[in-house]
Figure 1: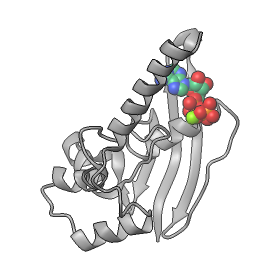
Figure 2: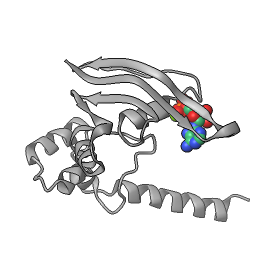
Figure 3: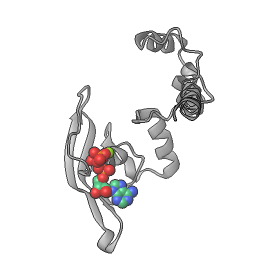
Figure 4: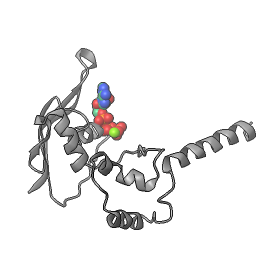
Length: 159
Ligand SMILES: Nc1ncnc2c1ncn2[C@@H]1O[C@H](COP(=O)(O)OP(=O)(O)OP(=O)(O)O)[C@@H](O)[C@H]1O
Ligand SMILES: [Mg+2]
């Protein structure tokens, strides 16, 4: 059984002279439990592909099936719930929520879904990532704080 099937996927940005065909009839499938990496030169369409496959953006044409379900035939509301329950996305710049601590950032999607987090599983994850000690810290705020210190250092000590 394939967890992901991509069929004849096309994505075009812009019109006329500004038209860019970022995805040009892409076909592939990924089996359950399989890990894959997408490799290609800058501008070859990796981010576009991930955005469409992750249902964050719509294709111009073609199909994406996740666990046998055709993603873009769902109404928007159903797709939002499907995305929340079935797709995990780690962004290059993380996009953590600064007002929430590490543990709350992990459980947030479940709370949005009115589901109770499994405490033992969350603890297991924190331990696995070696986050046992910092689960109450605020990762986003820490970065804001670091930037504040850096800015002040630059302003006061770098001439
Ligand atoms: N929002 C957009 N509007 C117009 N053109 C876009 C948009 N996003 C991407 N493109 C164009 O689509 C093509 C594919 O871009 P994409 O960002 O998917 O490539 P990439 O493989 O992720 O590149 P990189 O390795 O630099 O991240 C590029 O020609 C890019 O300029
Ligand atoms: Mg990219």
